[in-house]
Image (cartoon, rainbow over all chains, first blue to last red; front, side):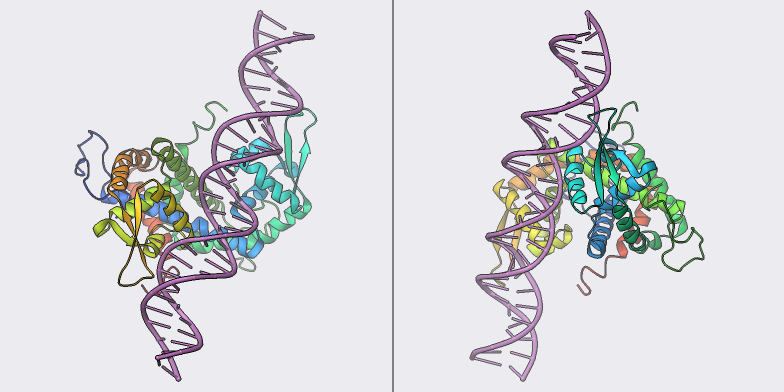
Length: 174
Length: 174
DNA sequence: CCCGAATAGTTGCAATGTCAACAAAAATCC
DNA sequence: GGATTTTTGTTGACATTGCAACTATTCGGG
């Protein structure tokens, strides 16, 4: 029971009332509350554990994983930012810190002097491989293992539907 | 396809291999990837819209809503922090900004001079009531309306299971 | 070619968040 | 009943973020 000012519902939760805004029904509120609570709790917990055990932010991890999945362990900064859901500026800052730690480096592209490749160093790959098992364990313990296989499918399905709603905006035509 | 270094799986995804850490199966990866993507996208989008339209952070909104739901529109700072999933320190700072805007105020408790009540002002309640319809619309458009009623139930159910895993830690005994 | 528009990425700075230290009051315990 | 510990909440220093301005390079006509 939250998310709405509780007092003075503009229109009592009548499914036909569509004047201003259909207020959330109790069931919908539960979905929303669960969503916000679940998201924050899990993300914070995973981040905390990853940071405590390996000094890596979930974002750092994301950067490293993304690079590790590419051929040559490299990506253009822009693509990396998009893929890791960060602004370019944010990526620049965060990437700087990883550079200082020797986990990644920048390599200028010769074809197009505007672009910079983000490259994973051997040291960075090692850090990732060391952190990965613990991280996977965290993901299991706080998310995966709390769900039955069926719930998992349903969650994945629901998330897919939600994520879809964001695909067009990012870039109207690839 | 992400979240794991892709290269050199410690043990190929064999369900019986439990030596170091059971790697995530493709289905599990999909769940996890969907979770992280969906969470971040939705939360960021809602926050952005709320901020653009009403100059309120999702956290600000959370604070105001929590207060509006209490009798007398007041709560102890600590309880508010717990309820809104913030650290006490974080709440103090964020609350300060809301005080400056006149949306909330602090009232010392006379019984126990340590505690401070966070109180919603009429102005704050009004701000909340103005923002709520737009916010609900956002929640609908990015989350609720993208799901069938059945998916909604499933999501709520899954989240409940996930959130449960965190109930003990926060406060062993109320 | 050359000029204006678009793209890639960085930088500076103000706003924000975090963490540990702190102060004040209450509860606990000899 | 006075020292000790807990609980509340704030502070202040320091790191991180986000936004807008900026540099550099390429692209696109005409």
